Length: 276
Ligand code: GLU
Image: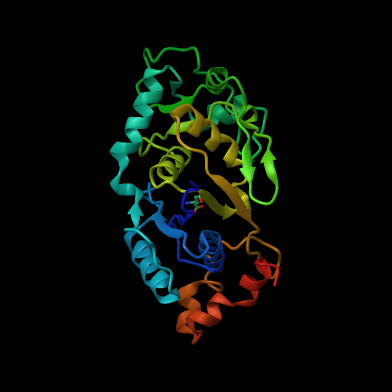
């Protein structure tokens, strides 16, 4: 039996909703198709940047635009203990280690960039015990060990393209438990995609490379594998990615300037992102 199509729009409310989000949400809804389910999830594990006024504005803008979640909206900040359980599981399997390095240690020791542009960690704390360290560690995935367990570098299915070779081995030991809130984006997003039985993950092209890492977590945890459909990003007239701090393409800004919801959904930058 084929699974019911389920997609999600998963914004991080670090700012106000803008046309880039509108494209992401439309993309997810379109990929759900008729008869499929479209879910909204709020990815707000970063309590310093995801403030309540942004979350309230997000709900208001989505309502106004007519985006409705097929299920109750999941808000990640209310589920930290679930993510912690995944971390505990990986720790018990000796796949994580604590890292006490400071940002400057990391910058000094690292020579490589990962496929997503982040710095590849040198591995300095991989063999060192926590003795004598008094700061809270971050928890890193021992990537070589993880790939050893899996016996392969997982690939993924990109809609319209087929299997894409994974590059997890080029990421090094990524952080799965942050110092400030104990968890990480990679961990929470893959956990929730599995929990919510998302069949097709739709999101911007800026997260394309992160898929390699997400596939490793899915395989380690025995979670089902969704398809992926990355869409082009919305660029401003200078060809720059829209920033959450800029308001010109903000949904509430357009709304107060007399745009209707329909006009926002058919804004020239939105249509351009869909190649129309
Ligand atoms: N919450 C992420 C963001 O707003 C998107 C997560 C995802 O779609 O995988 O950038």
